[in-house]
Image 1 (cartoon, chains in turn cyan, red):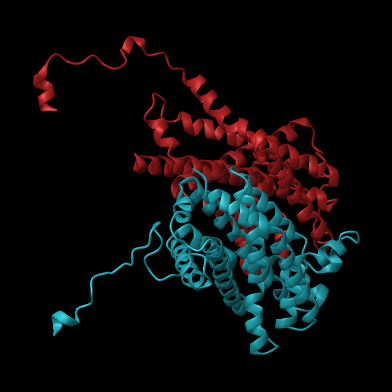
Image 2 (image 1 turned 120 degrees about the horizontal axis):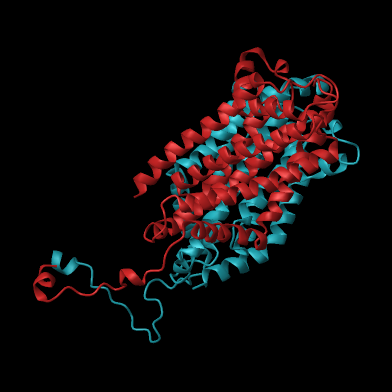
Length: 284
Length: 280
């Protein structure tokens, strides 16, 4: 009985030319994409969660930054606007935390290109899009976690949601939208350069987005010629949308602008990013 | 091994001692320093340094001029703010020092240096020289930026030289800390964010943006005594002001900042020695 029921030894049909012996699923089939992306995402997240420096950067530092920002500017902003400055600062800190994390991803991809890991992935039957998609997915997870941490600190300082639970859930995912678009841009930059300029250039961009946004000080505090730039840059739109979702104010328009900015950056980066990743994977 | 000992006469050394070229520590230091500095001219690092200093100047000055300008004691907000801008710029220079030292550690070139006839402190000395070069550029650019928005030295050449000297000492302390972080983490990915957020946090919670009286009571002690604030006091005193509102450049104003800077260097040197011994 047992002998007859034993599974037959692997009977690979002979296919000349060394085709796949397993199920006939093409390596670039969408059915492979999701499980493989998940494996690669989990790899990146596991690495981050075991690196103390990344953890400190993502979890401790934004909390300290938010407290400092609230102490220094909170009173002044409340005097000018009548609202707690937290409704701009909590989104701002979540965004800055998420954006500085893009540097980690960029330096990471440069290093994995140097040590040949990307080339190693390229020679195994992995979906060609899984590597990049995993990086962006991991970034989304990271930014959402940072947002939640910053939110907890904000709640302790007096931040409250006044628009109900669905708005609060949407609020949590707003920073990830622009953050992941910026991550894609930084990754593109990293794939086309081989030196230390990436972290610093990114830092400069982040610092500019932070200083000249409505989350830092209210719009009317900026000189007149600067106000249009401050008003229409993506971080300001994201913050305005998040203020609408948490406190009061327009929601649809700033959300649309945030989506437009993110989609625009993603569209510009998409082709260079894919080509650069392919080139980096074929190196050496 | 044992077979070797029994086999025959000792083999001649691969390189006879007499044929080894003489090594000059000064020359080695110079070569390693040039190795750090030359790429900055080509790969855009110098450009980011300059742009970074400008961004920190306009980034603090334009948004905060109205909000904070009224509550500070000096003749203009530019005069009040520039010391903080200088400090942020040299901190930014220390971030790239950290990145370079982490890259060197992780790529193993430091280990390679240890296997070569180089004095053990020479690589560190050359990294510090390159850091001071970045620091000088950051200082020059930020003072020029300050001059554009209205910052002036009011106390004469001697005090201006003191301003530069104190800023360079602080830059050395920060570069040392950056180098230590780079060597200790061996993780280039994390160095930049790890240093950027304290830079902004300490910068905001310092007397560089607004006087200590404007902070809530419970945090005033921290704000007044943290290193960045003491350095701001020192630099403000050395720069002076057209009115008498700037702090006097006396030892009681300057000493805490000097002690913080020297203390940072001492602690960093001790930790540095410990980390590099662990690596050996």
